[in-house]
Image 1 (cartoon, rainbow, N blue to C red):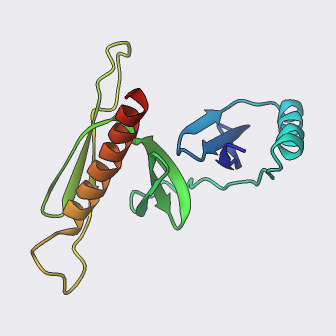
Image 2 (image 1 turned 60 degrees about the vertical axis):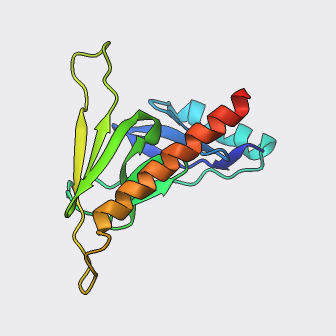
Length: 158
């Protein structure tokens, strides 16, 4: 079985399915009608012995929360509920200064509008020293995950 988990969630008031493989790849299928969703649930339950659970999505609109790297994605959570995910393969650079981490994305020449960068304010915990800031640790974590993906890709090519 190649799936790690496969929750169901709502995407624009329509059912959607999110499948994460054991390798950390994430596939999303949206705008699924109820009949097709039922067939997919039955198929996954019988063939892969995997139960599809319903996953809540944060819709509060808050701009603060926690980040977590899940598979090959950076997940932003509000009160422990996922709000959005960013595939780390779309990140071209990550830098930090003081209490801010900056993630820059690859440009897409095919789209007229695109996300160029995202900034996260990461406050330093009370009593922490100045040697390594929380934003620098965040940057190192992103870079480390990107390098792991690159080494895995190079290892497969050799």
